[in-house]
Image 1 (tube, rainbow, N blue to C red):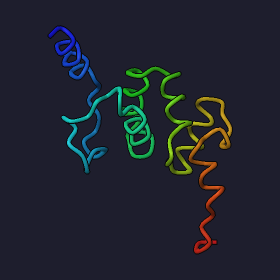
Image 2 (cartoon, rainbow, N blue to C red):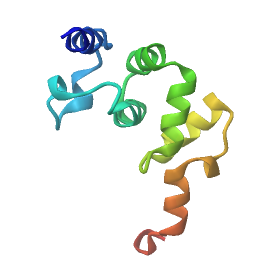
Image 3 (cartoon, helix red, strand yellow):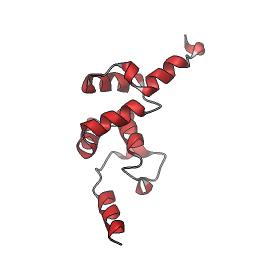
Image 4 (cartoon, rainbow, N blue to C red):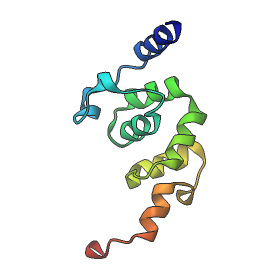
Length: 108
């Protein structure tokens, strides 16, 4: 019973992010720990500066960095920003390596 109350308390403590980030999902069903990568990636790709600040405060810099490098998709602008912010190279990102191994011949 106490675990259920703790889970509910954690769920209620998450930051309030812009609604446009979650046009396709029910935010009440999100698990902020289990879906950390999704939330961080979506915020970096589509969020406002205030959203990004809230995510950084909620998860912490190390957790955000760990999640970002493992994501399968991020746009090029987000990768560049994360490289500067976390002192990384594009090759450190899983999504960048996947893009390089699957070139898009139609837009070349």
